[in-house]
Image 1 (cartoon, rainbow over the protein chains, first blue to last red):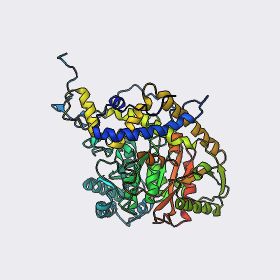
Image 2: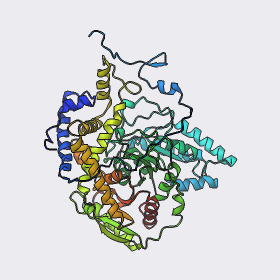
Image 3: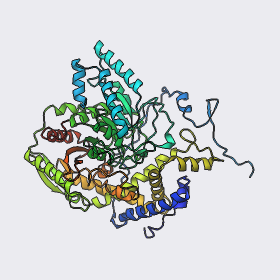
Image 4: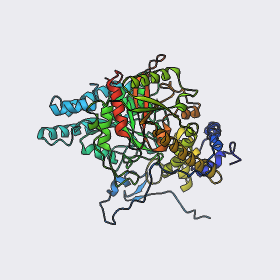
Length: 101
Length: 483
């Protein structure tokens, strides 16, 4: 909890978030993120000794449905949203494996 | 044709008007207002009129699905409607057609309510101005040089401009209540879990809730009745029997004996506009005249709410928005050479500035080395904030505050300072962190700029009945919401 603020490494966080950023965009984001992170650092002043974290507004329990076959959505309705398809049947994706290495 | 759902419903059921006539009137008003307001991303006239014809023929046959059969209600563009593009006002989803209906839409259809247009919003519901839309900047119908608020700004503006009698919005940190306040209409955030989130594109799953934006409290109750209830498709949906809330509003409630809590931290702070405070004070005086008692209450951790909210909401958003990767649906970059570049470029190009800021913050607070200091800490702050609210509700029935510290912002006011925009969420975010319910209702206009001021009433978990009854009693004694 000690080394906060100015620890926001934009390039590394953007890479984790899988966001490609332009150079001008980075300049303004760096300023914004510094300010925002500095602001949320107010949390470091809060004494939370013995306080349980709250993940959700409602007490959650696992919900299971009966193991029974049910109607599923029409395939075409989903495939038609794909950026690229093969014969409207399969979703085409960019190269995953680099054969040359 | 500036009418409420209950008035339209009565006219339809009395045979004084048909659904086609009602829809044509609102479509006409929409056509007239849209060039200056831009509340909608799209309105499918043919589809609306087709549903209106069907509603009319059901009514003629005596087969109406409900008293609301044939009334139009707008949908925020993050609520899925089968066969319509659901873009969340984002470039990355601009070509994605919903393969199915959200549960709220299915419930609307089951009651005969007609989905009327896709209302504009801040991209992925992130923002307080409706300026973060990839498609249009919606204007505030009360003053088009100002924003309608956000993120459900299109929904609120459409109702305020009379383009539609009511709309659905979603509220993750005030996104229903704040635009309702800015536009002078009623906005209700239900208790978390009362309304199914199935088919609502997720922003922050532990905070998101769908709710109505309407002209009055009765309509908010009617619409909430229509869309709420347990849904097996949403594991966080509450399983409870609920009597009709609209029925409880038949007569205005007697406010004698009702205790209204005034959180001192919400009034004693810099940044609360003096003219907003004046209108809120007048509303408090009115409640007292009507027999309610006010009590001072305290929310000691109020100053940590904005920070806790932005850590939790962005953490959840960074995970929820990871699914938009250009692979299975949505925009895919054509310049990418491999899979990694596809992710980086599709997301870098597809998301707008504010969404990027929030994904970055969320990724940061969840990243190794920072999780405990930010995310875990914020979750503990959330517990303390909820305990504050629970303690306060032991001393009062409902709490009252301004909905927002100021009236509607001028367009572009926060373009260079997003943090200032976040800070303006101070009064609304805690109800999302706690999961409790709240309503913003018009209480008058600011003396300095003439813009509407909203008063927020806050209730405990599942406290909607009292919340709506008190709101309704206030409304029947004022002129502000009488259109």
